Length: 610
Image (cartoon, rainbow, N blue to C red; front, top):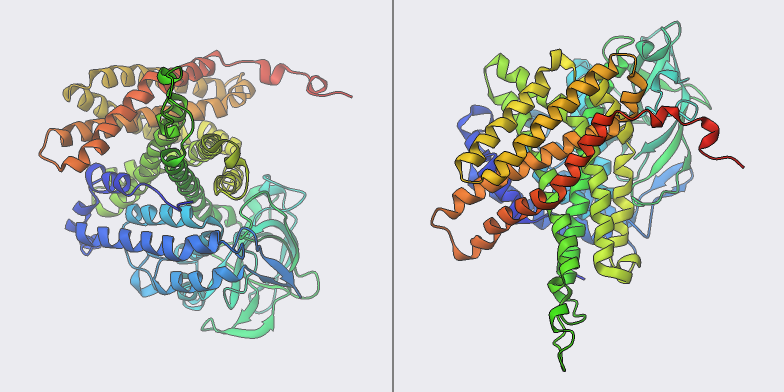
């Protein structure tokens, strides 16, 4: 079966026609990234994804990441053999830190372009790309909060892939309640700390892809306050290093105590790890004491946006597989010809329900792609603009929409890949075809970096009322501009319906905000996930207004005949959303406005009793 990735036409549509990335080259920071350069990078990334990353994910002889997962041998993790060559080429190509400064081994490219590249890589081999993905997050913490000595020791080696990084938060007894951690840090005379404790669910905790692993570890210094206020962050290497970051042949008592057997993402190792259980384990404090959670949130927010892009990449691949299958699989005549004496059998893409399923997949992929790209566009615009008010606006939109993008995109990714299985019927359920793996691999995205329920609590409890609600009002202002554009373009059926949805979303936000600050706080948080989904629905409706306006403008110009179906398809996709899914979304908003007491009213014994 064909192996394919995200739609190249749609990626270019967003990059060049919606977000106009080539205009960034007018700014000194991105002067080298004109349209030709961006297209060349995108093509190189796609070629690398198809030729190197994809084969390591699924090979005919099954010696690949999914079938031949990591193994623990003498306290060392051996990753799938098929990963070594593409990882080496990935690092040599400068992909790991492509948006970072050249002095650290990066390419200084716009975040928006980097996200398009990562979407391709995640669709091709998410298990492999998770290794450098977490490495980049660990490096980002050091770049932002580390000392000059720590940057000199670790940053370039991390960003060039010589070292790997992890994220060590979760503990068995604490789970998502990070403030309940038990890992402790005792200060040594030389200024380092002795780390002692256990962490679980640590992705990429060890591998033979690199010469050293640098663990950012949350721990509590003796005497520090309880809860998250008393947490500090430490760099704990697998092997000790000298002052220049060169690896010494001295193990640091970081022990892999087990590998988690997972539903999916089989090629990416997830471990339980013990620090200091068999001797001294040395860690270096990052920044100031008791500010570990603040520092770790930099990595967590990057990872949350990354989880959305991962789900987008996997579900885009699932859609590509499903569409290709539907165009080739011949089965049954059209229902209008079923009673003909000799009805012609058609490929299943001609059958209405298959088309509905494919259009569902296409719709949510293109909507969530817009949302992920918009977040990165905001990051680039924040870097480009010299206006402090504009910087604050873009930062506010990023903070507001990060939990929405993470949660909405990952849940829709699960729906999309499930639909991909459905399109193939029985073949979708067997491992001979890639759809089963897509579903297994995407399922984790809604769980890590804070479950989607935690994202909903974050949106309602922190982000909605942040800066007196200004980021939410800024989002509404952006959507209002698109309403005016739609009406001005003659797309009144979109403009009018989007206005109805926006007004309803504002009413939901007001009601939920008041309830969360009052006596109905528990009922409000019982509806927090519904509220987040409603804001995600609003973003989808907005995305299709933007897409339809840009497409109608393009169709009014002289364009190649072969490009016409793409732009016509954009307008039809918007019509599908507003004719069908839009009404489901309004119903969800009605449910939010109900502020149901049922969630908290149900007695504990009423859920299940023997």
